[in-house]
Length: 277
Image 1 (cartoon, rainbow, N blue to C red):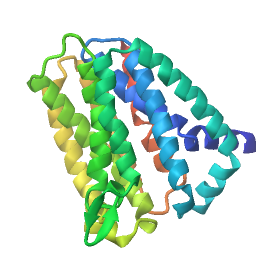
Image 2: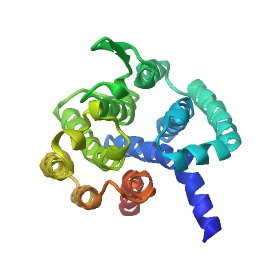
Image 3: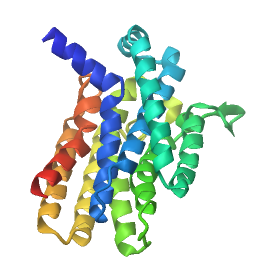
Image 4: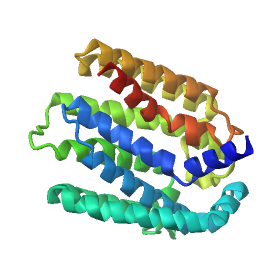
């Protein structure tokens, strides 16, 4: 069990899990729009892995999670090695991808930097987007939506902005809003009071209620989005799973609850979809 736990810790906290989740969300977007390519999803995977590890290593000394801080320093060499290979893979994929797609990733690069680099003056202080009151959740959700929905959509030679795309984008955006709530509930003891996260502002109970209402709205959107009954059933099942994970989230959740189970939602979604395809 100790060996299994060490492997699981490395898989989750090296950000491999969240990188695979980004691959799955991107792949789900392309499959919905009738494209089965893995090129863009793999590129998103490498970018996500590098971005998350950059953010973690840049700010690890300021982390209030002592367990995670110690884990990162104990595995620093492996994280650097994996990041090196991810960078090589990213460069290789850049040579294969349409230049316009790379162009759309430039804003993501700056958004990642500005997430931790103070650039906005607020009440005589320079703040990063992460520390700006009320902004963190919307910022993260926008980046995920932009990366895993808009960019893969723009990579399609036959893309066309229409009502179906906007409904799909809105549904995914709202789902991202919901799945980030368990993370904010987890971090309520670490986040500073002036950050004004959703649980800090309205409380944990009301945050869950807002999440449930958003999921109900997502379910209505899905009825308009999916013509295929099997896809609609799978999407509805995923919303139920997201709702259960949301309702059971607590401020003293296990280290795997959000980082593994919640972030595993798109992996389960793609697995179920591939089964029925």
